[in-house]
Image 1: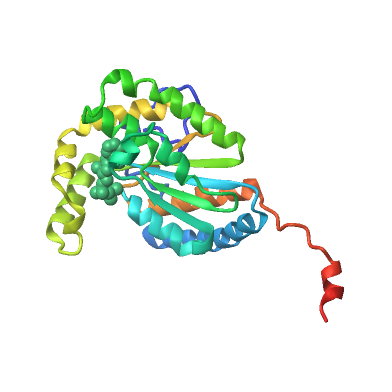
Image 2: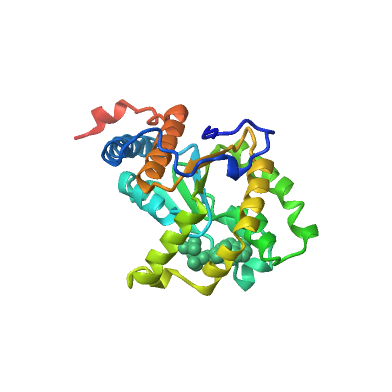
Length: 265
Ligand code: ADP
C-alpha cells in the first residue's frame, strides 16, 4: 500500500489505498518519547509565533467519528501554552449559523496573528456530512469545493498556514472504539444515535472524503492523510507535522529596542 503523508496536488485520493495501521515500524514507547520531544520544541516555536504576532497557523482535524480528534487536541494542548492556542469545535450549525453562508462561522473562528488554531471538525463537514446525510441538495454542496479553495487561498494570502489532517482509521477499528464507548460509563456520553447511523453509511462517508481530499488538496492548503489506528502513531505524526510547519515559518521575536536598558532606573 502506498503511504505518503501528502499526496501531490491534482492526483486522485482514495482512502482505500491508504493503510490506517501504518506506523513506520515505531513501537509505542519510542513513538511516545519522540512525540514528547516534538511537543517540547512546539512549545518554544509557538511562543515565538505568539511574540512575533504577524502570522497564524490552523490545524484542521477531520475524520469519521472516533477517529481521534479529541485525543489529538489533548496531545497538542499538552505541548503548547494555552495563551498560544485557540481550539474551536464545529457542531451541527445553529439557527443563526444556518442563516449565514456556510463559511461565516469558520471565518469568525480563524485564529488571529500569533496563535495556533485547532479546528475540531471544520468547513469540510459542509461537503461531507451534509452530502452524506443529504442535508442540502447537490446543487448546494457541489460548488462548495471551489468556494473552500478560494476561502483557504484568501486566508493563506493573509498569512495563515494550514495544516489539514485527515485522521484515517479503518472500519474494524471504528467498531472497536464504538464498542469501548458503549461499555465505558466515562465515554458513553460521547455516543448518540447519529454515530451508529453514520457508521452504516461508512462507504458513503469514505467516498465523500475521497472527493473532499482530492478536490481541496491545493498548494496553499494541502491535505495530510494520517494513519490513525494507533493513537500513539497518530500523535507522533501530527506533532511532527505541526513542528515542521512552525520550523519552516521560523517565527522571530520582534526587534528589541536597546535604549530600554538605559531607561530602567
Ligand atoms: P464530536 O463527534 O465532534 O465529538 P458531536 O458528537 O457533538 O461532537 O458531533 C458533532 C456533530 O455535528 C457531528 O455529527 C458532525 O457531523 C455535525 N456537524 C458538524 N458540522 C456540521 C455541519 N456543517 N452540518 C451538519 N452537521 C454538522
